[in-house]
Amino acid sequence: MSFAEYSEIIQEGDVVIIFLGHESMMPIKVQSGAQTQTRYGAIRHSSDLIGQRFGSKVTCSKGGWVYVLHPTPELWTVNLPHRTQILYTTDIANITLMLELKPGSVVCESGTGSGSLSHSIIRTIAPTGHLHTVEFHAQRAEKAMQEFKEHKVSHLVTVRNQDVCKDGFGITGIADAVFLDIPSPWEAITHAKSAMKRKGGRLCSFSPCIEQVQRTCEALLDHGFEEICTLEVLLRVHDVRAINLPLPDFGPEEGSADSSQMASDVSQEVAPNTGNTSVICRTATPPREMAGHTGYLTFATKPRD
Ligand SMILES: C[S@@+](CC[C@H](N)C(=O)[O-])C[C@H]1O[C@@H](n2cnc3c(N)ncnc32)[C@H](O)[C@@H]1O
View 1 (spheres, protein in one colour):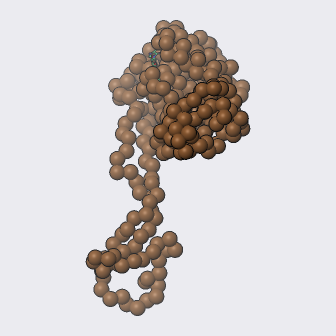
View 2 (cartoon, protein in one colour):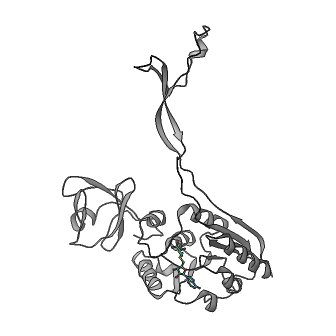
View 3 (cartoon, helix red, strand yellow):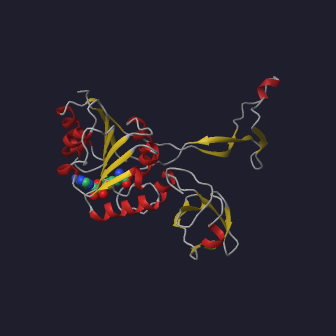
């Protein structure tokens, strides 16, 4: 198993995602002889996991069942142990596209934080690209390295434990893209520029506050960056559900067969207490509430020398 490649069969040492139900998952490391307790009973790693196919339905000791999923960056983002605030897939998808990441890209990132974005970058640039990620908090840098090893992607990433604003990214003139998620990104623009390849390259900075965005944009302009733009990505997930719509009573119909013709997935019935006709139809409903502001994404292109 690797977070950058799919494998069929679960092996000792793999990380798997246990799917217990909607909104209920947990990552576990497979170890022969070990057991994991769930609300449906125990999962015995040796008999229930090792040698089984990823995606299998596994029956737990109390008779309930779970699915065992192959790990992906998307699943890791919603299951990882939080050591910091993290980036979620809505922003990550946009960052990956707008930074023009592809297999073979060389990317710089700071800070590593909990490694949520790092895993998506690594999967996108594999098998020939490389991520240089900088984190000044020693334990976070150490933990990220350990996770990359466990997830079998450590050959695709170098973690540096240093202050990116003082010491930069540790590379010069080779990065295709730079991503910043630190409190003062404007202090890292000089290092970002020198890490980037001589001919162009893309930069993105994530900041929750508009004042940070303003300072970053000023620094990008001072360093000659072009195509500077800031955007905010919001997600609206629509649920499909059956709803009962009462029909208004417009009096007797004027006899056209067409007027009562309805779409094939709509059924008509008489509501029991009012006698009014209603329709039950399947429809996509927007959320009543949705997650608000996470942060602003500022993108820029390094000018060609
Ligand atoms: C919000 S977290 C990054 C989360 C990450 N993008 C993710 O998706 O998991 C910010 C991280 O930047 C680190 N950091 C802040 N300033 C830094 C600096 N000057 N140099 C290196 N790391 C820094 C912090 O220690 C923290 O771990």
